[in-house]
Image (cartoon, rainbow, N blue to C red; front, side):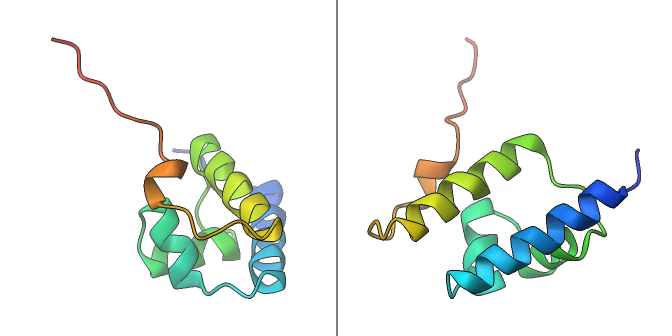
Length: 85
């Protein structure tokens, strides 16, 4: 597996700044992503790489919060999983 890069560390710093600007806790954001608070902290510190799908979820969530939208359900940020029969 690839190790976090300088980009991953910078992305984590930007996530932390945005979260703090919106007045959110790491626990709140972790719940939206469906990960532990500890895991989300690793994303912010750049210790773990953030997948593209989770990055997209965060962008949508932060955009909604910045726009003042009501607290949406966690399901809004997750793509539905379909099983083939």
